[in-house]
View 1 (cartoon, helix red, strand yellow):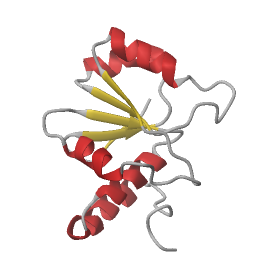
View 2 (cartoon, rainbow, N blue to C red):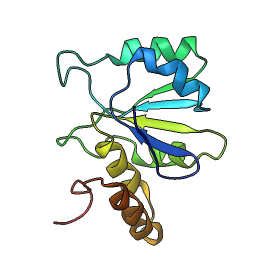
View 3 (cartoon, rainbow, N blue to C red):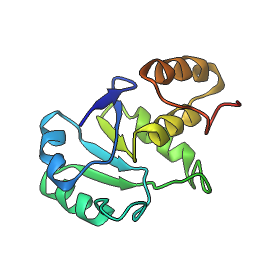
View 4 (cartoon, one colour):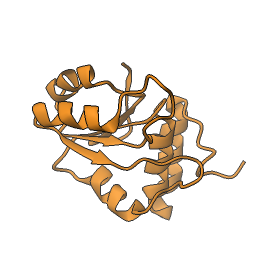
Length: 133
């Protein structure tokens, strides 16, 4: 499972499974954020299953599922605070990591946004959710 580092404290990835959580914890991640609603595809691991695996691994699990209809979600400021928390290493996941990268860019201040866009685009993320076409 490729993990893409956006900042010192925030990385993003595609869909994780409960079996991935011990390795995620071993890599030093203290928090896993789900940015993907349950049921997007039939074989997708549920948030409940991933949360149970996180609990077993002593990793905080945060639910923040978004899609194109409700992007950027109900508490973008709170999500940004979590992404920037120097006391945690956060791994956010969705189907491909793209939604997570878009959410990260959306949480940036105007002064930080261009640098964040550059970081995410250099990795290869489509930022059409937060940048004009």
